[in-house]
Structure formats: structure tokens, C-alpha cells
Length: 381
View 1 (cartoon, one colour):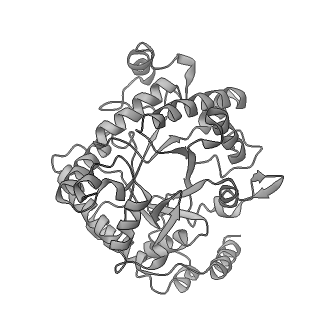
View 2 (cartoon, one colour):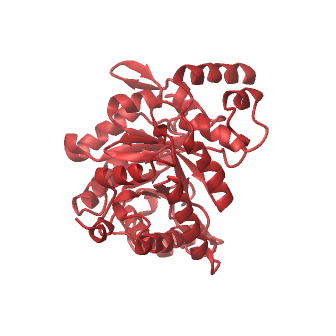
């Protein structure tokens, strides 16, 4: 197969991500790439948020994406809701440019997107209910009672199908590697567990259909709170139960493979809170995921920028190579055992170069990481 045919691949592959890893070998540490779900993930992924409609946004992202890919970051996370689809559109322009230049091929890059949150075109409407009624309910994308969070969330299979296809169009891709349901717990809070599970099962069935057409490789859950709260909380998500629903949707060969949840120095629950139960044993989310064959992606690595300044002294001592607090925070997150990748928002060449410098370092050994976590917990109490 020649390089041109690699570029025509529909999604990331084991061979493609391994090829990318080998090409980056001299620029990153061996700890940087991890094999999960037959793909080589970088320990630091690129979260995309920019793209505000400016005419040079596409050119900006062509440069940023090129710099990131050259530095060893081949995991790109997007969402329709970011800048009212504009972020995905400029990422699509950037991907087309790097593919055309031959910098990378499609099978070397892991691309994820998210659906479920209602996307409003253009400026935020003065009346969300009227917008939803005219544009979604009357178009039979969903029934009125399928919305939650004040008309801002919907898991209707038809609406998810539309969002999924729109992401493909925006990104200019033939297929996505991961498509996440974003914050599905809001439906559980408002509609109750029975309705929530019925709707989630229908959504799983819809995405399995997209997989059967070769437009999607796998899907998952992206959540802010669901995996961080106790089982008594109405927003709580049981990973074991989600896997059972996936089996109900498509048998043992289902494609529910990923969860995306916050993991940073301020929000450590998925690594420390034993709120999951697998085979009768209490587990953290990371432990439960490993037992159930689910891959965990960490988000909000810098806690919306709040971890770029004034970290505890213990962190700087534990990461002596770090020139900045941001680097120390990234190093902590990417060192967490069981994590495939830590997503970091990168909006400038300087951010990318600073963040990806961490990819050259070995991870913090598990024993040292456990000691550091105890010290941080003690200092916070």
C-alpha cells in the first residue's frame, strides 16, 4: 500500500498509529505512547476550542495542528458545541491541509467528537425553547419530552444521527474514531434512571448502526459529573451498567469502548474515589474500566487554566524538570496508571511547545505518584 492510499483510510488503525509512533521515536520518551483498544494513544492529546469565525482561523489551525503533530500529538478532540460548530470547521480545514502536504495520513490520527448537547446555529437565541421547537421538534428530530437541561440536551437517535453526520461534514472526514455522548447524566437527573437507560440503549443502537456503515469505529460517554459522584447521587453513572446496556444493544461485540472524564490535580475522583462496583468489588473508575475493557481519556487537565499558576510546592518538587506549573500539572495527569491520554487545550504555538515538552519525560513512577497524592490530599484537608 502506497502513502497515498494511507491518506484515504477512513479512521485510525493499529498500523497507522504505530507508524506515527515510530516516526516520533527520537522526539518523545517511550512512556509517551500507550496501546489501548489497538491504537497507540499519545499521553497528551489536543483539545480544540478555538475558531470564532475570524477569516484567519483556518490558517491558524493549520499551523497549530502541524506543530502538534510534529511534536508527537496525534489525538484530536472536538465538539459541535465549541464556537457553534466553527471549531470543527477550522479543524477540518487544518486536517485537509496536513493530509495534502503529506505530513501525516488519516490512519495515524485519532479524532473524537461529541454529541447530545443542543447546538444553536449562530448567536445564542433569545428564546431557546422557541428555537428548539421550530428547528428540531417541528423537523421531527426529537419529541419535546426528549429534551433536558432547559432544551440544551437531547439523546434522540435521530438527533444524534444528525449531529454525528454534521461533525463528519465539518471535519471533512469519512469516519470518526470515537463519538461521545456528552453529559448524558443530565437526562438521568431530570427523567429518572428507567427513562435514562431506555434512551441510552436507543442511542447505543443508533451508533452501532453508524459503525455498521463504516462511518464510526467506536463510541463512549463524556461526562463532567457522572463518574465523580457517589452512587446515591441522581447524576451517578455505573460503568458496569453502561457496559450491560451496550451488550443489550449489540451483544458481546459492542463498540462502547471509551469514557472521557475530568482528571486533574483539583478533580481527582476517577483515580481515587471507589464509587464503581465490578463483580461485587468497589473500584475507582480507572480500576473498573480496566476490568471491563473500557479506555479512559482524561479531560480538563489544566482545570480551565486554573492549574497554570500557584501549584503546591510538593508538585514542583515532584516534577523538577517542569519549567512551569502547567507542565507539572500535565505530568501528574499523564502519569496516572490506566489513563490512555490527557487532553489539553492548546491555542498557540507557545502552548503546544510548552505542553509537548512534557512528552519527552518519563512518567512519574506509580509509587512516587501515590506518595505525592497522599501529600496533596493531606495538604488540602
